[in-house]
Image 1 (tube, rainbow, N blue to C red):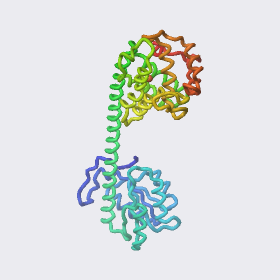
Image 2 (tube, rainbow, N blue to C red):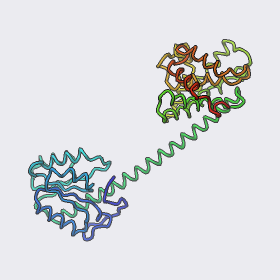
Image 3 (spheres, rainbow, N blue to C red):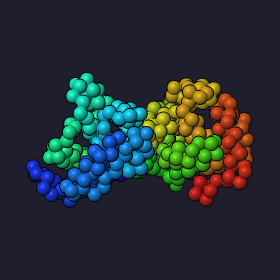
Image 4 (cartoon, protein in one colour):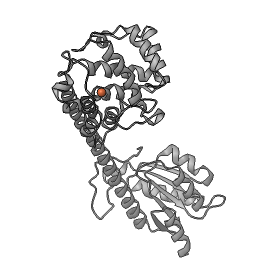
Length: 369
Ligand SMILES: [Fe+2]
């Protein structure tokens, strides 16, 4: 926020004999159609030690001067020809984008209480009565500059605190994510000795998200959340997870619980990343035609990131060896995806994936490992 004031102010004391150094740099904009008043106030403030003073006698130029000069305090005449002080005040308030509002002190000989109330309601901070009492002018100017300096200091401090909190929150989220990724990795080692499936799915899901037209920041989040998609398998017994043959209906039902269990493990996260991971874990076995599990969602009711991971998970699982079967060739797997596109998979996502793999988007070394 532009200001002539430093924010390390510690200016106190009843007199204005010497302008505290921190206030001497305060920038004062005086708007009054009476040039004699402008000259008197300027001399008075300069005599008190203020160095940055700008005057405007034409109210129509007030807003431009305000935006250019970045004042810490505005002294504004209430009654001017053309634009009134009220109109100028309204325009200044409308253009002020600062977190800490610049104080506006109205200059007036008008004792009408209604005008004073109106000015206060519009955001004026104070009044100075014409004819001016020099000491009152200086004391009020000093008080407003002191208040502004403290408010700026507070705003700066708040900004620092917010940045610190945001940074600590990010660190906590990162460590929470890392812990969950380790847990997912531990779960994965039970049915994939290399423990690389989840990482490959993450990397490929990120690339597919980009290929499907998602913004890079979203694709990056998906790449980081997708490795947690099967974290719920930690609750599936080894006898089922590592069974070499076909699962019985009961065993398959047990296996299917991993989606809801995973969502439960990841639930309650406040970050976008954790909420995304929860949705992927929950819905990555839903099918486009509604025949999937655990919620039997269909079409676009299935979160897009889960539709992305569904295709990638299928591709990676089939093209890599498992304890109970060999790897299926890439071309054959892509043909299978095309066959069930529109039933099992979102057709647009399946098409983008097939195109990505066929058009030179072969799995990277990391993904093919
Ligand atoms: Fe799964």
